[in-house]
Amino acid sequence: MHNDPELNPKQLGRISSDFVKVAEPIREASYAIRKQDFSDYPIFPMCQISQPIGQVLVEAFQAENDWHYYASFMEEFTQRGLIADEKIFKENFKDPDEFCCLFVIDEEFTNFIFIPYPID
Image (cartoon, rainbow, N blue to C red; front, side, top):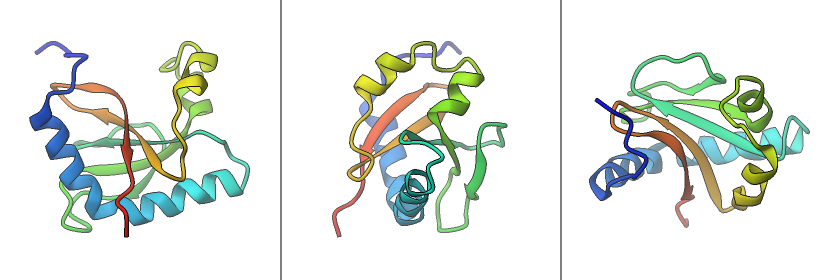
């Protein structure tokens, strides 16, 4: 199966419905990454199988979620060659207090998406 650069609405719904179950610990991790000066650009890889990027943050099925979530940041992605141009990435990065930068790893779609944190 080829990697489709477009995220279809069904796939976005599947990602969103899983993300809301784990949004709070991810928001807290994003704040900690920035507060502790690891990076101003936190990234959270999500996948349904184990992968080597970042540190495990939330395991699948831990909070009724179907995906694994990892904590990472732009600099690790740059070192691994997953971000070719930091300047362009930084220009497109959304406010990390309002949006989560997910790196979705799936058979149908592998790419960065920015998803808003749920409003309490």
